[in-house]
Length: 218
Image (cartoon, rainbow, N blue to C red):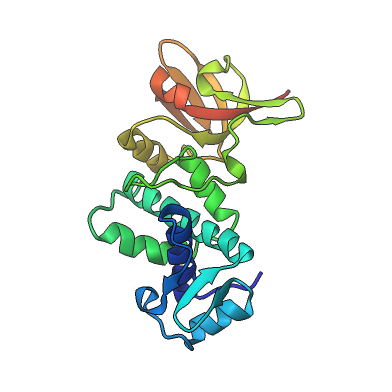
């Protein structure tokens, strides 16, 4: 898969939104902000991602799939900026446009997992799901369950965090309580105490219900 430039990805994003959310199958060059014979349009056509005539541009099947990935990255970037980094206003969109270009496949799924597989961006638009968004996770005899289901002494790895406030999510991220971290449960009452490396953290049941862990067998 050829790596696209930022402007090319923006064009695919505009075309995907137009087709899939506004029911407009084609877009004029004027709306896209490019010339008919521009480098960006020529390269997208060469890659088989768009087709065009003298007035309009539209996505091919491959272009639609590629455009969906760009939209997913952009909206996840917006969600990350708002929920974790606490960015607001016009900076959300502008910064997300820059950030999305660096969220390569694999990294975007880690961001999605960190955010608890959000369904919508801060503007209320749908975030196209990825392969990481199947919450019914089962790998062999390893299960993903809330931290609150674990017993004293059980070990596991954090898989995703879901259904908590932005404030709590920011707090967990700042402490390093993130997907991929290995934990061991050291107490379940009156609060949930667990260790990550040499550090220990105490959380209430609301947070323990939101932190999903893949249990490690002894």
